[in-house]
Length: 475
Image 1: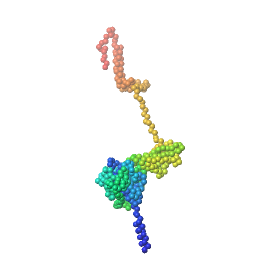
Image 2 (image 1 turned 180 degrees about the vertical axis):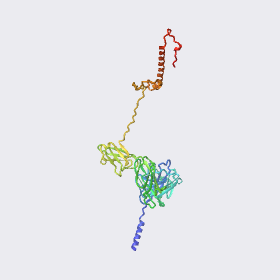
Image 3 (image 1 turned 120 degrees about the horizontal axis):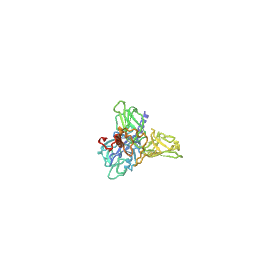
Image 4 (image 1 turned 180 degrees about the horizontal axis):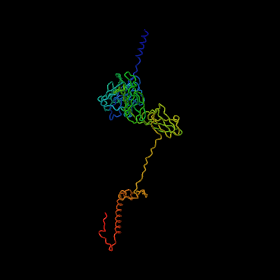
């Protein structure tokens, strides 16, 4: 009995001397209303308030009733007590803060409401760990300052992205640099982790997908749906909306691939119905997907001695070439699963791997797993659009056939105009003019014939006088 008590006492002593490890991030600074335009220039600073390093890329920034994935610009493990900045656009952030050398994460949100907004950090289990409900009256409203958590209170202060928030005094103390500004500090104030908010049990849907992808490139889509007791829910009604006019409905939750055809920003949503005939979903989740141009090309090929193939990725994100293939003029090479082409880098495939020969590199194409052509080498040449042009001339030459087939043998005197219209015009005269000329010719000829006949039938007279009755008017 004494031995048992002794063991318990020793265990309690050891337990109290070993610190308990816990993880957590807290929102410590918000830049929501910058001087000038806010578009793609907003950012949020977070601190790892846990006792061990933690992977921030598995967490989410929540705003506008939408969770936003976090993509690291380099390392994703934030050390205990360390800081990281979540930028709406890392490129513009680096322009605003050229001296920043801390940890940077890329995310995508439509923009904070400058008057009032609620943002939060969610852990991988979608629990809210840190949330802030701020208004413009709290500070940082377009005056060049940010909103900072100092000593448990949110105040208006000079921005210090990636650095500890401090009390600013007019004199004394040292200096710290943050971006392009320098802040005079009097003392250091440590931010303390807030306890997790206790939420009632509920069904939670969690979309698992990269939030920045390339257009035309298929990417895996998956989700996890948990019930009231954190059990996995795989059956029911799952409706996906990809934000580009396409939807997908399933009775069983399972991963699949999807492709966005054009660059842009799309809202991907998942609605889960535990009962297939329910009208209102039991859980929903949404994620903004940023689609950028693919930027993949065949940058060069080798020679007959070394027929290699080089592929270039001109985009700002890495490209997974798993299941892609290179088609040569004769042979085909399937790229192994797990082959990654880093952003703004080139990857050269040796003929020892592809087994390509000098004929293959005469015509090389790169295909995606879905069979779409992404690049060709050499680039196809477009033939010029040649138009057959005949210059105009003042002289128009027309061939007129003298065959009987072109000129009718019999002319209908009752319809001279119609008959004449069938005769080809010559010397620029129209058919109508020829018809009238023929009609007048017939009248004149008829008049002459009538006169001759009358003269022939009349008895001879010595004086050859012409009497009135010998005259006849022909109309």
